[in-house]
Length: 274
Image 1 (tube, rainbow, N blue to C red):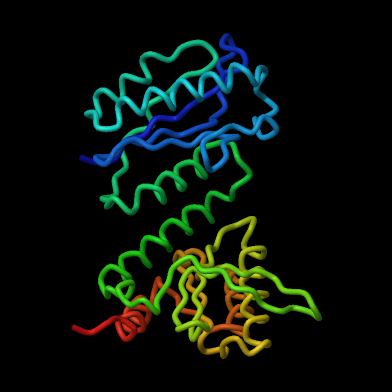
Image 2: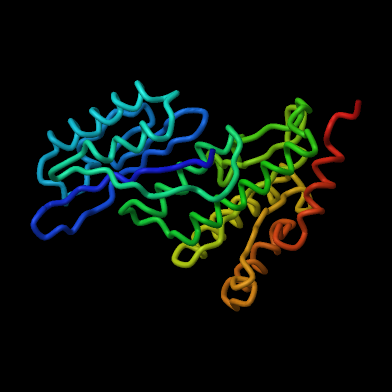
């Protein structure tokens, strides 16, 4: 079964029927997950983060709580039961069938897919091109990690943060997606999504971190790896190519659109043999 999703919409004036998207509910064979504007990681709602276009924060919380509570009873349901949620919603708060996700996913892809749908469908300031690029980039890396089984090596870690001195008595915490080393890092990898509005911000942030960890001797330049996956259209964009060139001055860049085998060989060399 392909994943299917519903979009939570708020309609300020039902007569005018001008809905605003504020959440996504995703059904997969492994259960139902959801995300709504204003929620913290523990699924509680921060009133200050509820969109200003919502007239009643109380009713907003009540609807989110209602849907959260309802999907817990449907977690192992058939998709037909999940779709019936959209029939039950009325008034200012409704659920609409968003359709089926064409891609085949595995269980570990569920949260990434939910993030992608939320960032591209909900009324946020997210650059949807960057969100799509981030999703495709991570999926490619995940496939390579599973194929090479590099994660079986205890020296290879995912989602690691390290402190880097940037001035006298000042340390900054930098996040890297992949880390290889025993105690101290030998190699650091960072996925760098490419988009439209935030292209400079994403590249500049990654370049800043790579520049600092190499200049402070934490790793060598060749052992700092920026992972990108530009579309063919982006590869013809002079501004994006310029930004990628800048990134290449402080780290080794692997373009997964054209050099996927390079990362596969690199991870394979770090995997445990036998």
